[in-house]
Length: 116
Image (cartoon, helix red, strand yellow):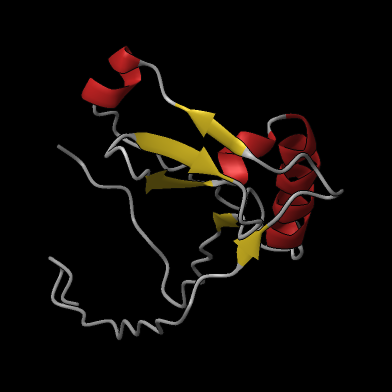
């Protein structure tokens, strides 16, 4: 990666299987069928980005966030399910207890604010 001031920084990326965040407790099993409206409307899935506020704090921020998500998923458990296609070629949520994907980024270079 090259910076505009002429200094060159090394950027490395390690890719692996993302860890899954499952519900903190056992939840209901079964299927949820989507409504006719849900079958035809595509929705963009958003990503939540969290940034460290201080270099000396929040060393276990990823663990705290994963624990909080697993507790919330107990009440909103269908969010941890998988979207599949039924034999009638309609979408449905199925309980496979695989959980949500959780990605963590660790940077080794200092980022600078981009001015536009």
